[in-house]
Image (cartoon, rainbow, N blue to C red; front, side):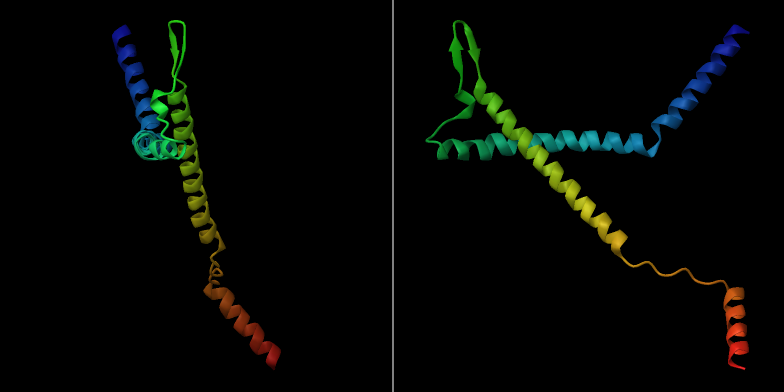
Length: 136
C-alpha cells in the first residue's frame, strides 16, 4: 500500500518534471546559456589576444596582464580587472546590438501592411444585392 502510493507520487513528479523541462522557454534558455558561454569565450579571446595588446601598444607598450601592485606579501593584479572590464563592456555592447537587430526585424514585421480580412461569401452577396437595389 505504502509502496503503491510512493510509486504513484514518483510518477506524478516525473510527469510534472517532464512537462516543465520540455517547455519551450526552458529549452530556449538552456540553448541561450550554452551559446552565451561559447560567446563569452570568443569575446574573452578577442579582448585578451587582440584588443588589449593593441590598447597596450597605444599606451606605450603596457601589458595589462602584468599590471599589479605589490603591498607587503599581497599582489593586487589590477591589470586582470581592467581586462575583465573590457570583456564586460564588449559583451554588453554585443548583446545590446544583437537585441537592437532582433528588435528591428520584429518592427519590420509589424510595420508590414496586413491584408484586410476576406469577407465571408454571404456578406459579399448581401452587399451586391444592396448595391443592385440602390441603383434601381
